Image 1 (cartoon, rainbow, N blue to C red):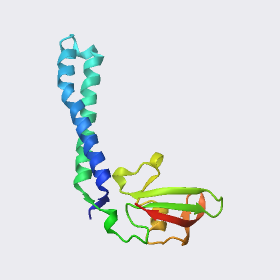
Image 2 (image 1 turned 90 degrees about the horizontal axis):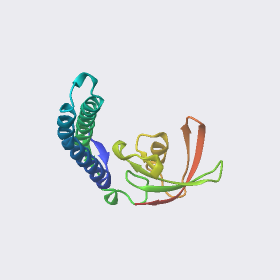
Image 3 (image 1 turned 90 degrees about the vertical axis):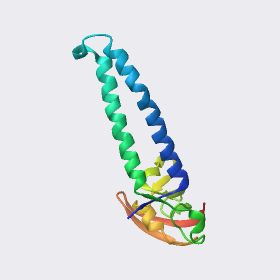
Length: 154
């Protein structure tokens, strides 16, 4: 089954792959220069560049493989009244009174520093299909979270 991703997330991963490939293309020259400096057994610059080359190739391959298994979903074409993939959801924690906003995204684009949570998290699963005004109780590692949905948007 294809994993969901937003168009923005897809474009971001494509950009990341392009950046990694650009860096990867500079490494053969760096390796050649390091090789010219002599004994490869004790040439830290050479070994570091070769190691970086391997790491970059692995990262590029993984991202390309992950992206190939994704399906771009347009949240604007989904039900506007309920919490669905790609939507921003503003919630109020009924226990603490804290208001938070989350965007429910695919695994490749999740970034908690941007309040983007993956669709497979307990919070996202608990919010899916709910509407403004609904209150849900979600089991999280720290205990039960009781959230009231205040807003749903793109």
